[in-house]
Amino acid sequence: MQRSAEVLTIPTITPQELETKNDPKTKKISCGSTPTTCKKDPYRSFDGICNNLKNPSWGAVKEPFSELVNNSYADGVHQFPVTSENEQLPNPRAISLLLFPSKNIIDYKWNLNTMQWGQIIAHDMSFAGRITLINNNPVTCCDSEGQLASDSDKNPFCAPILIPENDAVNKEDGRECMKFVRTVSTKDIDCTSSKSPSFPINEVTSYLDLSLTYGEDNMAKNKLIYPNAKGYVNDYNPNVKAGVLKESASAAFRYFHTLIRGQLRLFKESRFPYQSIRLSDWLNKPSILEKNDGYDGLMIGLSFQPQDKSDQYFDREITQYLFKGNKTLGLDLRAIDIQRARDHGVANYIDLRSYCGLSIPKDFDDLCDYMSIKNVNALKSIYKRVEDIELTVGGSLEKHVHGTLVGPTFLCILLRQFYITRVGDRYFYENGEDKEIAFTLDQLETIRKGSSMARLFCDNGINIKKMQAKAFELVSPWNAIVQCDQLPFVNLTLWKDTQ
Ligand code: HEM
Image: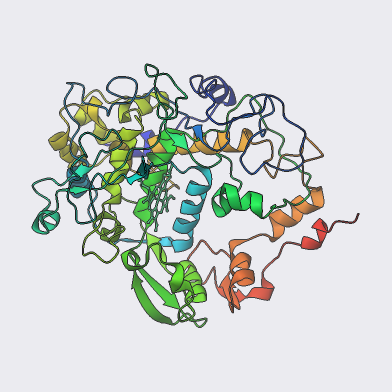
């Protein structure tokens, strides 16, 4: 029997839960250089230090990720997780091929801006660091032709994804593996002892502070100045650590890789499409922005094309051709997502259901409440026991909670993540408790009334004159394209320095 409508809701968050349970383990670990006292500053520091005055390292760059549930490492410290019968977990590429194939079904409401905004938020909050050089030698593990490096089984940073027998495309090309280098952990930088659990290191600040746009060096170099401030939503809680949860960054949030479309179209101001490009041809090649009105063409494209539907299907451009460069084949982002969650020792699917107060499946058949029978059977074919199902895999197969783009387990995790990200940030723009820091009421009001993605595109495009008001939603009779000057704007004169 299906009880989906009734069970696919999640219990609400109690703030105390996130205070006390929020990471008692990493609470005391600090990996960067931290001052013992903080001076009062109206602006954020570029490295996140001293946001929390009692715990200056919380949320700072190069600090460990947080977790909701204890790690799943085989040795409790750093070794890749194994099954409940002490066997290797199934091959990540095989899981990707079976459960996350390519099928282009598009979203009827949200456009590609929604996907793109998600990626920006994701990397504003976390970027797991990878070692690229050891003793000045590049860490290869598996080369761009898909051949295993000779030292890959000895190098502790290597965990290449092996190509399974049934992967016809890669086998035919003679490929053995896909590159995978482990994330730098607290153990690698001697921040935790060799016997205590390791945590992956986050290279950026955990706060929503645009840390991704500038990078530590540029931020310092350009002496970036934040606007003066005052504000309203006073629920800053200094006992909440705004860390980035492994369950979020290494599993739940990555589910939205499903929203990526492999083919991008460029549009004229008339919304006439004049060019179409493959994602894998242009990843990491910003020169496309300078060619042929590419900047405006792509920006209009983001607002005019639907994103891919949020579902278990992932575009081949990222599951077969990711970072292919000038080669014919590339990597599989879904297989990498699965492997990365193992690398980070993310707890398994059932443990997270339990943490979230959701029902705990005792066997595969119990999963039918949350997943289709077809998916349950597929899971049965790859995992021996329901306890072995990984969060990245199980969570991505759940039916969605009504009105959201995720199932109940991922929703529970994402809600907790964004809750702690807000209430644990002393500089959150709506916080008005400290008048030295806060926006004025007028400033806050103009931000709330006047800021929009649509206006941002209008004001930052080279020659964009028209945009729909709800720029994350597709154009429709209810969201028609209008002239830019009809859209509200932020009154920046309220930030004028009068002294
Ligand atoms: C063109 C679109 C995108 C591409 C090519 C892309 C690619 C990647 C790659 C290569 C990684 C690192 C994988 C690893 O080695 O572990 C990654 C990580 C990640 N991605 Fe995406 N991604 C895209 C869009 C998105 C979107 C739309 C979201 C969410 C809404 C997202 C969320 C994340 C998160 C949370 C991580 C982990 C960040 C960290 O903690 O290091 N990505 N992505």
